[in-house]
Length: 340
Image (cartoon, rainbow, N blue to C red; front, side, top):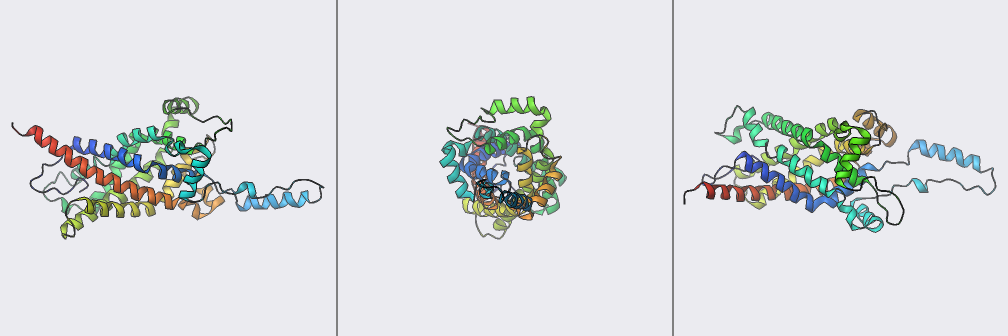
């Protein structure tokens, strides 16, 4: 299980310990990988403006302007994408906006992890026990269907609870701040973002993209937690490794890779829709169809490399931290419970 297959000498961690450990580990992972996440959001948010429609319109205008002496000709130069690749995006952001731009939205990100990771990861084992009718006798006998159902449930619960923090985080990461340009930032602070979104878009604006985010996180939770759960279980079952950091590292890396492949399309749609201005898309499905028509199917895997770098590294840091924090808290709990 995600909480770890403990030896008989270990005290089983309580639900409270798992919730606290998951939230804290999520914050640690965010602190380490946030620049990669910001680069991913920037890559996913920018549209492929060099579409067939733009090419056609530009050629028509150019043909008309050929008859006008001295008239400047519009070209596709201004339509080129601004960000290219994860490290190119990071370099461009640092050069044009300063190093602080890589951590734009960090406060909302940490708020999100404390309320989000604690639910979706911390309650996973509990939901698994509920769906397996409370059986704790043999954790390894829990079927994959039960694991998937538990992952979907905690993922949906976490999104419903923490969606406003995700909306604010994505908005902050996507806003471009150019020093000396005189441009006004969309939001001045995290609190201002919550207030502005609620005022301009209504309270429901804070839950914008909730449906695609529930879909996305149900997929992410199932692929991430279940993959980690099963791989770690197999490693321990066949004595490939002991229940320590190398085992956690291997299972977490595999979980990150599987999650990126499965969840990238939904993740891109979620980012585009949550960062869109009011009225740009009629809904998440309309957003996906618009992307497909204007940019082609490859648009759904925009930012795949930063997504994998981020999810892979995030999973490694989070799961390793989670296991260590959980063990430390469990030992502390055992110390408190033991007689003097």
